[in-house]
Length: 425
Image 1 (tube, rainbow, N blue to C red):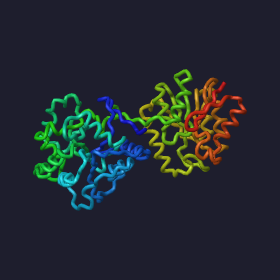
Image 2 (tube, rainbow, N blue to C red):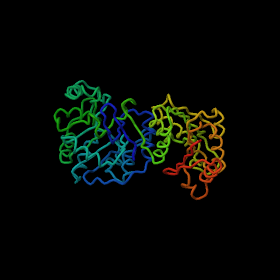
Image 3 (spheres, helix red, strand yellow):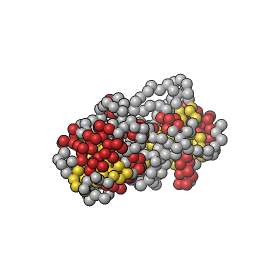
């Protein structure tokens, strides 16, 4: 399942993220997270996707051009890329390029997005599906919560005068960088805008022309005011809720932990990008979780043993980002296991989840070190039992866990995706 967006203000689940203008750190982290997911191929025979990218814009680490294209490539959808190789680019060129391209488009719908600013979180075909289901207009632009340039009184006045504006709490400003519409209508619309004069003082701006002409095209041209398809990504964190879906291993782990009386205090040993930490902190609102990891390279083959130091620093930043919602309940302990276990009193934890170095000696040392920290009735759990390199005999998770269970006489429970659990009796 993909990363899910929830707009807490409108209780909607948009599927396309749009980050026009200045960016912030979380956009870069979200881009990395979404592009690292494996998406199912999608089919959208009713829509043509198009963007504008000359290929000449200087690379920016926070806003790399080609994002729109790479996002669609995850779903094996190839967009039309307009303006390639064009010199002396002006944003107003988008209007004429789009009008020209639409003359050859045969699909009933068209979806357009800026190359540097737009990210698909789910099947792009859902854009057309929701447009059909929820909107009666012919063309739908994104709606944002910041005053879009240019800020001219007459352009702002119309947007503020719309009946829906008071309900949106300042999120009623049109942005031309993301849209979905009916192709037949869009041909006439973009042809008209391409022939319209530029707004005085803003000769290069397509946005100014879109704003200037909107009263004439309204209500056939609307904005996605309640974020049913598009989400402005500079939204406040309290409004914009992002959540990675539970993996199979999380489902098993959560099921075991629900047997314990709360509130819980636990430790995750081996955190990497914080995926399991996030799942636990969301599933148990009263949980206090120790997140134990060096986030530094170590010797030996394991899940992340060959990662360079820079990649592990990025993983720590990802962990911090995805668990920020529970910053008062998480505790990040940047130390190696098993030595980190010495920081804890015996019988002080309800559970420990071991997912660190997977080599046999390391797993044995982790199990021994953390077992004494778990209270009677608590759980020692872990990951990658008999999976991946463990099944090939390269790792030693299964061997170490089996030996420990036999030695203690404790029943061993197995769950999805190589999860394991031993209750301390």
